[in-house]
Length: 484
Image (tube, rainbow, N blue to C red; front, side, top):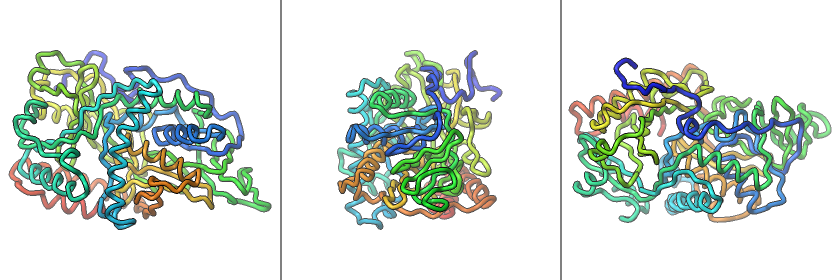
């Protein structure tokens, strides 16, 4: 990181800058031993917390437990870029094949509403998460990106986006909103809000606990078992009853009518789930607070969220205390689906993100970097999010958000509520419900494939920045290999 300006108290890891702002939460007690519940949720991130919240609001008498290895909000929920966005992971055509074109349009509309749902719940429950609904700007900085940007907006029109949902921006408006160096064109959507993600996670966990949900932290789940798994008389090898599903932990077995897997990027740590979702790494840096004379050159007075049209893209926000937080993939995958423990990221990734910061915002070139961190997100083999519940086995799950999880987790929580309560609703008929996705390849094919994909994406970006006017063939090949 030689040559990168750093603050005197620069930190790398420590979970995330967002927790550095508010302090790590005090740990809740661990599971004291075997317990029985109506619903057990494995994972204390947004998906688990929202599922518990909506179930408890709908049926206050339900006995619900959340089992979390670290603390609620430790994973991607407390480390992400703070995008409460209506963007949804995966191919629209692929989702439409399940239940038709209109069903995919309905899913997108549900995502629009979910942005407002999170904002309204935070307001109603007194959760101060620095929420500001300024919308989302996509920016193109070379001719190839501009072609993709225009094509993307046209494609969204075909999938039910109206002019009020997304539009190309006039040049003067784009420059007035946000000065991005080299920007050729930009699009705008109002369906996005900035949040401080750790504040949302900690606040939601507190609300869920007050509703009567038991949150057990420092409790590692090693395996999830369906109803009837195991030995004679309906008794499984871990002591669970045949009529119940079970979450096997290092501190005892939790049996429940339903066990919900809400582990996202950490799913590979569970027995039998090693190839289910690939833990993709994403990294971030954040500057010190920038002075008014720097913001005078950048603008960004509306605190919109920002993303570029590169293949190995970056995403950014202007924080509530006037910093720039910017993120990207960095080193995307660790061999064997390994994940980090404290959020430290590689020096070369910090350098890459700093170079992107300076490229996009030259006025911030002298700004010192205060913090760097990383986290993992879950990627299914077809890159499409899914939510599912099997009443016969008592097992359910949601995830595979591919970086769009802040809003999608809320929609998942409400959908799982309806599935658990056996309600036939508009949410349970959406095309991401009940999708079956094949597993990732075994190692070393998985690691080799991911490395190749992102090598090709970076090569595509270099080619397009230097001389390309259309999307690079490297990117087409990467998409073909990845199955996106």
